[in-house]
Image (cartoon, rainbow, N blue to C red; front, side):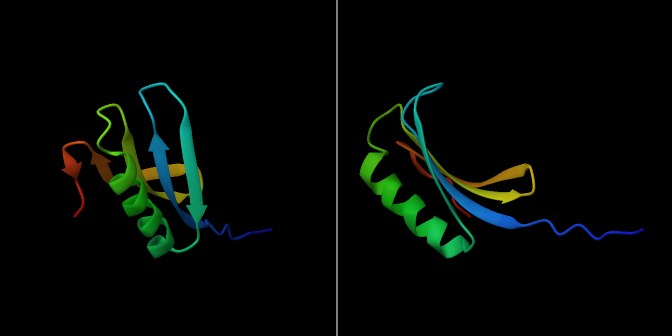
Length: 77
């Protein structure tokens, strides 16, 4: 019996307060929603030199970082 596997793609905004420290994460089906939160968190928290905000695409168990926001700015494409 042949079963097709559907891999769901979702988008995450991840706010990490310090390396190996606490993380806040939100997950959305739409990239725009995750991007809006990514931008909001970047503007609010990135002045702290330890904070990193990431926009991530998740497909199944794989994650790919799309953008990163640090005190030096947004790496976005």
